[in-house]
Image (cartoon, rainbow, N blue to C red; front, side, top):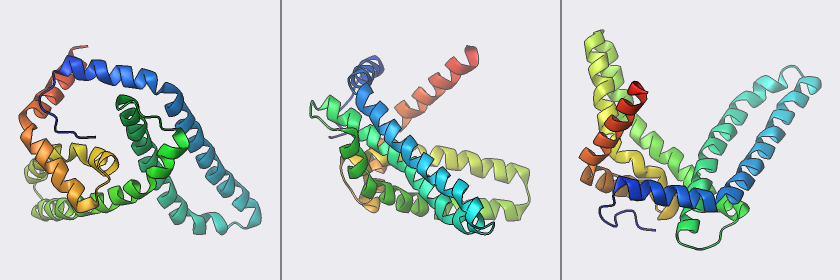
Length: 195
């Protein structure tokens, strides 16, 4: 699926999105159930580990935190694939979507780490300055700088790209439509504030 197909009106985009969500409702619910069952299994392991040894839950804390983070990435990527399959009129079951989202989820972690390095450098420099204004300015810069990377998960999942290529593609799309994306965020923010 190509994300750069040209200009689309926001109302048409919302209409298409709602139609795809309506068509994919069953598959999305099935993916949510699969994810909930797996999370329940992990929680059960933690619960039962209390009976085996009081130290075991402490030992399992870091690996289980990583697993929960991975699941937190896996489920949205599976939903992206299910919705894209419905839009392209190809069938995809929840288990197929979850299975094919495993590698993009790992790539998402790698891409996030790549983006985190300059972010941490900027925040560290601002913290060393001990100026509240500098820290606030860095947070604002980071917020505006990350807008082009909004399409990272979609490019990882739909285009099956690696982390670097997905970052480049997301940057291309986001920087091309930067002003439109910013205006959409501003209108959503204004609507939330008004209502």
